[in-house]
Length: 206
Image (tube, rainbow, N blue to C red):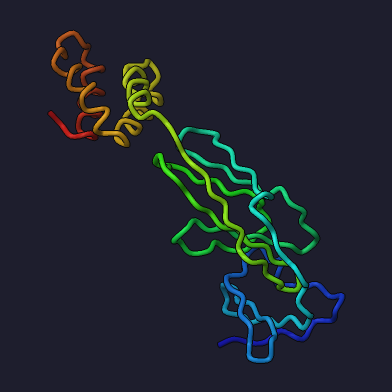
């Protein structure tokens, strides 16, 4: 299954915890209470060190921001000591790899309630219980569809392309607006008609 790393002295940091190319994927405990970890190369390392009492973190140590209407940015604001690593997961998904990045960004979120968990591990492989963070994503889909339609006829190609992608996310709200424009398409120039047709194809053509 893998080769064991030499036993570590109480003041010796585990060398595998600082290898960015081989993030830790899992931590297990054997029948003797020894904590082991597994990385991408299937190497098992052993940490001979007593567990730390009350090694935990809380949801209050995570700040949640919304840099975009459909994006959530989570940042761990608690204390990290030398050798500490973090990992995240969304509810119902697998844990991410252990790493030093204190942030998690989740994109393309629909309006609703979300749950994210975070864990911390120290250099001796003490792993905290998961802390659960709950947050809401709220936005007015009709307003977003109207704003996207306005940008559909922008002179900026990137804005037009982004508008089509946004409208595709809200087909019900976008379809009615686009169909009204389509009924009066003779007033549009050829370029605007092309973008209108592109959007209609994404939301369900007439």
